[in-house]
Amino acid sequence: MLRPRIIPCLLVRDKGLVKTVKFSSDKYVGDPINAVRIFNEKEVDELIVVDIDATTKGLGPDLKMIERLAAECRMPFCYGGGVKTVEQAQAIISLGVEKVALSSALVEDPSLASRIADKLGRQSVVSVLDVKKKRFSSRYEVWTHNATRNTHLNPVELAPLLQQHGVGEIVINSIDHDGVMKGYDLGIVEQIRDVTTVPLSVLGGAGSVADIGELIKKFGIIGAGAGSLFVFKGSYKAVLINYPTLADREALVRAAHLRSA
Amino acid sequence: MIAIIDYGLGNVLAFANMYRRMAVPVSIARTAEELTDATKLILPGVGAFDYAMESFRRSGMYDVAVERVTKDKVPVLGICVGMQMLAGGSEEGSAPGLNWVPGMVRKLDTTHFTQRTQLPHMGWNDVHPKQSSPLFAGLEKDARFYFLHSYYFDCQDQADVLATAEYGSRFACAVNHENVYGVQFHPEKSHDFGARLLKNFADI
Image (cartoon, rainbow over all chains, first blue to last red):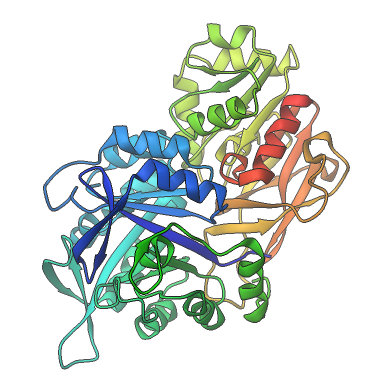
């Protein structure tokens, strides 16, 4: 039986790991390589690393860092940050990365997904949508550049378009829920799930394993991403890398009564 | 010495690191000469079928690899798209495959799916070895591996199927024909299960 994926998402800034709240007030949480080693020991399902400076500072992906992380990773690894071209995506995959995540570049030009998929296959092309609820409205909008630019695009319209262009996975990242640890924004996930068939992963808001359980119960096969939950412990947010044990994860899956396909 | 064929695609370093951790001698091959004294080969692969075949052909290692596998009968393990390349061809593209294991690569059938999530098949799934094979020694029960693909290996001869997995329908996720082995999942990214399988290949 295929299992839902529980995915730590690590943010890199100035070669260190950070964790943000609502995309700002970032706190240093440690060394990326060290974190990967700990997640190896904990046998995590998958890992996402995003370089949050790469696009806003106009830098390309730091291939040296990606190579070091990929070589260390004993689990599937998805890299995002600053990827704008087919060549960059190819270079990253050739370093031993399974998936390349793109955000602003795909939002600006969804057809870039098909050009990358021609070389790398759809399964390795991931679109990250940073979404934020419009004020005084039930509508959501896609933001880019660490939530500083509003594209005014509706993610529920953009997601199927991206799928059509060859994206193999969509990560829905809630700006309002980032670092808040009060649960996922299930409403927007449901809207996007209804209009797409590619695997979805959700990021932003997980504050407990129960929040992940709720997501899995509702959506079955889904990627449950989290940052704060897996790097902080306790109400004072002491840095302590953690991850549910295999038995705990199996219990979540059992509670959701999943069936294969 | 196991040689990992580095033709520009796949997790070459991840394989090398895993073997080094297990103290299994391994080399990364980038030229034909580096394949000549290898006792085993690993053919990794990530990407679209045609692009992977084209990259392998252009690598300068293609002819020697074919000779080592088909004439010298050196054991080879194809991984993910590296496994798909072992077939005669793929529905994903038009390039001919290596044709080392009789069969064709086809798209996973999702027509009877009841769930929204369809392709790619992404995540950790159970792997059921069909026959006792040294490749799956110690992995007969409760083995799970990481999958990331939309196409699967449709074996011409069912006797070549080493293991199956289920996603909508049952499909071959590991194949073996003579000295040629292939797995659809990623052992290099499947923690201890993957380490075990790679060690088993080293011990064959």
